[in-house]
Length: 261
Image (tube, rainbow, N blue to C red; front, side, top):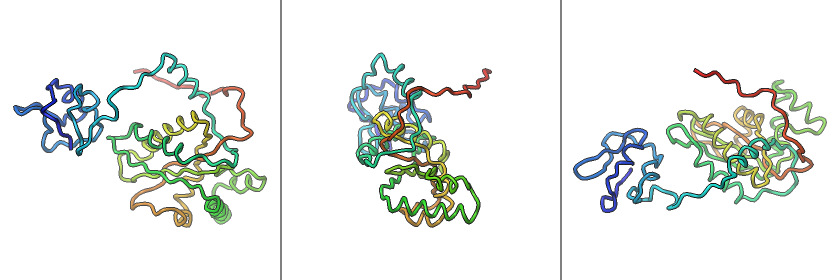
């Protein structure tokens, strides 16, 4: 729970006014949490405190003493980076270092999440044997059910639309009973993807893989056991792009459709 160090607190009240659920109050003994109020662990109180007086479960509520400086050209660079993001499906045999993937997923911890729940967790598949077995299970499922027949017909001509030639696969799973697991996972994955592509790592959202991993029990049996009431909500192909040099930004014929009220 939130704790305010009264020795350094100057009672400026910024923590009280910033709290989205009015968890803190002023009292005769200083700023304190209100009994019965639920803190969502956003740490906004710590982020606005000028004296670092706030801790959470014995740890400082802030990540760093100093805010990073964002350069003047950041807005243009960000716009260009978003517009230049491409989905990659052809990759070299070089494995993406675990540290790079870990850095991206750590950054995703700062992505928005409904009531700061952050229930999304990650599985990374690096084993080519496991990937091949998953693909065999998917092809067998397609043959038996007739679902998504394009997976099989594309595979017959050497085009794996499920996982491309990825050296790694990312599966994101979350608590089905959280407020917004699909949205939270998509935001976290988008945050991680922007970082990965800035590091030269190619990504592609793997919708077939996500769907089949939830549908085919034998795929789940190949992976670490999901906690009860958890499902896969997203998937990526990962790797270093090969033979995919994009020379232009493609046109988008469906633009923002906005109504102002």
